[in-house]
Image 1 (tube, rainbow, N blue to C red):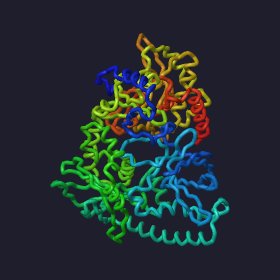
Image 2 (image 1 turned 60 degrees about the horizontal axis):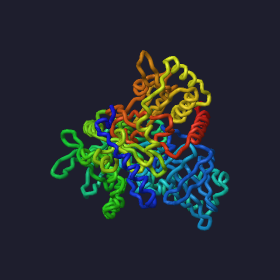
Image 3 (image 1 turned 90 degrees about the horizontal axis):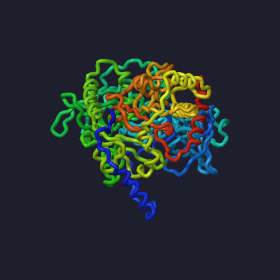
Image 4 (image 1 turned 90 degrees about the vertical axis):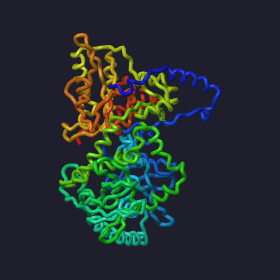
Length: 629
């Protein structure tokens, strides 16, 4: 099914292309009309991988938040630190459960100075990005997926985060000997140890407060809501158990069921049942609002939580007061950024559901929901009601009438997205059934074969396709046994080598919430790509996928697609390339076909073939080292 098949194809893009080229002769670059991207993808780097790979390269580049600084850093793997230099100032970067944290040391004041890391990357890929509040874009591919240190749960206990990630390592045994660049004198050490005792007391109080069953939720309206944890907890297994053990080791808290039973709420003359969750360990990022459910199990509006208080010892666990006050007093144009931009791109039929969208499609909320599904024992009546209401909501997303929109990002990469047709016709023009913005039109010659690859193809026999598959499987420099990442490099190397033998090769891409469950262990991807060849048999031409990472033979696109489970309602639909980055947001996966030229989903139109091959070979060299792991 082609998403935009019903859209009328007009030559308007070509007209704009020639008009714009003519106008450039008379207008300075900064005076030209610029069309905004439908969704801000700028936080996704073009080299972000298809899956999550946790590793610690020897050299990284670190970008500091709110500072125009990029630091070159070297790993101290023994201590899990990176050492960075910026002029005369030394920075120390550490990976913690709360994200990537950094600090420098003021030699004059003898003070530790905390610094927030925005991004960490290598030449090959982004391995950490401090996520912005994305309003449920449903986008992925940024490596570790960082924590936002301004999130609701951290506001009440931010000093604990800094202590755990920065101060405690300084007090660890042998730190002075291993890090001679940091001068920790007796006075500073005594101060830090005193801080340790204070933090220890606060952590114990928080632990006791979090382990109670009775809470009071103060809402933004001033209403106070009484809630109880009435559900039993069960033991976790697999990856969730590993996660729970890490939490218990770091915080001393055992993960419990977080579902709450709360008193009914009256809003706008209607009575709703609140569906609320609370974390069972400090600083873990509780969302700042709760869902309301109608008596017939439909999603109602959301309400914002101002404070969460433990009734047992009257300790405030979460305090959103300052954040809510800042939003209330902010200039009108301040809040009209991410959520308003996204709302503008959505089909009008979804505008009334914006609160549910921004909450339920938040990846962090989804992860915490899955955790509670695992740890909360049956029966869970309130959760069942919520799931029924959520399913109806997700069906609305899956059936939304959307158009495909292609934009050029600031870094020269092409990005696709699903948008409402109202937005598409307002902000773009149409080419081959796909809406493109003005900036993209200027590069139309370069993106034609991606949006619509050449229809005239060179075919081969089924036997020849099998022969190519065997050759690919025997390519010793390709990391076939490291499947978590690198499909883009594997596909590019295979395509170029097949083409050297005179075979016509294109690529097939799939985007969505994907998993290969029959792999041991299961693999989770947000996209995958492989080369395709055209096989003719009995007068019928068929696309065949060469993908030794998943199969032992050439397979049809349908079989390749079926191999990857889609954790979405609608399943796979066909779109042009570049595929919509927000496919999973709209509860679907997307299949796209391109020429063999694109290297990554967010393909940089300025990137030459030499650079692509260099990156592909470097990626395979890196992952060959990890195959045995």
